[in-house]
Every structure is written in structure tokens, then in C-alpha cells.
Amino acid sequence: MIVEFFVVLGLFFLSIGTIGLLRLSDTLERMHATSEATTLGVGFTVIAGAIDFYPDQIYLSAILALFFLFMTAPTGAHMIARATYREKGGKNNVNQAKVKSESTLEDFI
Amino acid sequence: MIIEYALTISAILTLLCSYRAIKGPKTADRVVSLDAISTNVVALAVLYAIYTQRSVFINVSLMLAITGFTATVASAIFVREGDLIK
Image 1: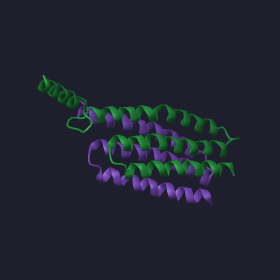
Image 2 (image 1 turned 90 degrees about the vertical axis):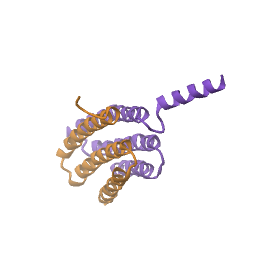
Image 3 (image 1 turned 135 degrees about the vertical axis):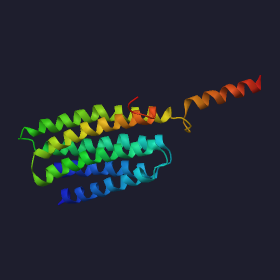
Image 4 (image 1 turned 30 degrees about the vertical axis):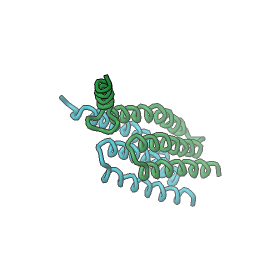
């Protein structure tokens, strides 16, 4: 019973992540939706697997997978965000914003 | 019964994630979508382990998590630098 509860909870978060990936409008918004919701969804699913296989020693492997996922998913999301932020010609480019502010300052002076 | 429905729904969700990988306007959207797919496949492996009661697939999910993280980091470096090996 508790295994099904955690599976349904994980599936709910996976659905939220996928809907956010499909419906939101910007790259950073999509990454915000998937990296949080999908990590929580897979986390609850792996907890369900660990509870289901509890007397067997494989539940330690499931907990290890959960720990590894919680360590690596924010790292990957951060790398994608930084790559998007520094992409050339993008909407969120930091160099474009700097050039724009400098030119407006010179015009003002 | 619930596990079978969960397997079906998460497979459909993984398939829906590939829409953004095909149609994404920029390369970063495709990288985000592939990251989401590789994270969903981990959940699919765990659900399949619960469904068949074979504990081998927990190890499969662990290896898929490691491979997905490596693929995400390599794709992010490709988006940022434009090239992997210089």
C-alpha cells in the first residue's frame, strides 16, 4: 500500500515536470520546471523501490541511486543554465546586456 | 494494478518529452529535454523492477543515472563551447 502511494506521488511530480517542459515559453523556465519536479518524482519512485525491496540488500543500492540523483541533478541543471546564459546571440546573454547599458550611458552623457 | 498504470503513464510522459527534443527552438531546449528523458528512464527502470519483482533493475537505474549525468554535462559543454574536443 505504501509502495503504491509513493509511486503515485512520484508520478504526479513527473507529470508536472513534463507539462512544464511542454508548456512554458523560455529555456530557463523549462529547465526550472524539469530539474525540480523530475528530481522529486524520480526521488519518490526510487523511495518506493527501496521500500518494496526492503529485506533484500538491494534497497541500499536504491538509496545510493537516490543520493547520487540528488547530488547530480542540480549540478547538471546549473551547467545547462550557465551554458544558456552565456550562449551567443541569445535572449539571456550577459554580454549583450552589458553592451546595451554602456551604449545608453554614453548616449545619456 | 497501480504499478502497471504507472508504467504506462510514465512511458507516455517520456514519449511526450521527446516533442521538445524534436521541435525545440534552440540547442539548449533539446539538452533540457534529453536530461528530462534520461531522468524519466530512471523512474521507468525502478517501476519495472517493482513490477517484475526482479531486483537487478535497481542496478540498471543506478547506472542509467550515472550515464545521464555524464551525457548532460557533455551536452552543456557542447552548448557553451560549440565544440567538445579542441
